[in-house]
Length: 112
Image (tube, rainbow, N blue to C red; front, side, top):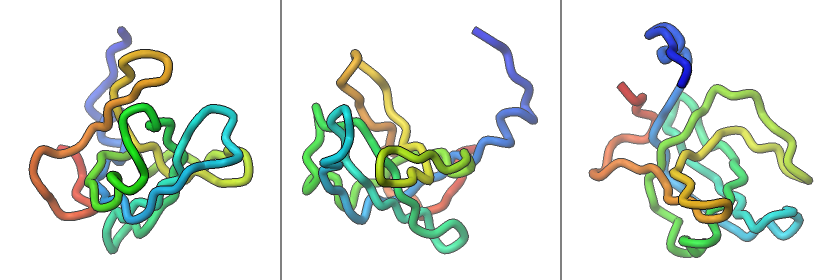
């Protein structure tokens, strides 16, 4: 494991957001959803492609708070541009458990 400095950590914008829409990403090579995540007034709504189909249904995701990285460059994934990385823990090659706060917090709040 590589050691990083505190200033490296501070550069990563890890924020809380609420999923406002989740739909099947039909054009994806691997099963995925297209998420629209509200990261609050300062950051706004960002789009993400998330391979979380094993444990979650789109209708269950709406209203769920998640933890995302919002300062990576956008990444073209098929026909969409993913603007943030929704974080989670990989149990295996296809099963991801979302990282999320255990209590509601304001959208846009930065991980401290």
